Length: 122
Image (tube, rainbow, N blue to C red; front, top):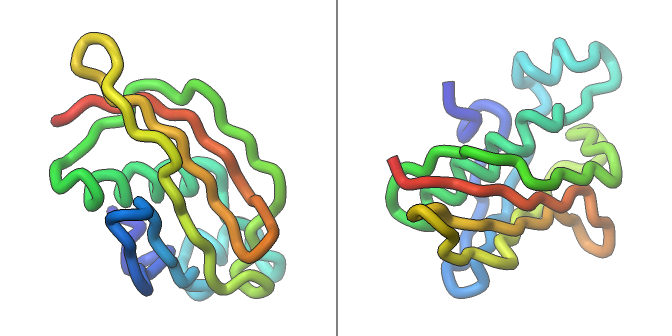
């Protein structure tokens, strides 16, 4: 299952800024289970969202190979924070045809997560 159109919807994207504006879907089954009455976006879902969005940005399917660093700085509750912005700050070639990615998840002045991930093309 992809999370796009299940956990989130893409409101807009900007290829030049490498960013996506997302609307979270609080009625998603994931939120009902994590946690009832106080939904929280799971860290693994944030990483999966990054993978799906990177594949759209790169126009090819990407496979996550390594989570170099994942900092979850603030909880993303879809009832309190309806929209977030995913920005890929760095996308660079690594060894062995890998792609190194740094992403930040924000809303206004709040930084929710910072990710450093390594991918390969499928």
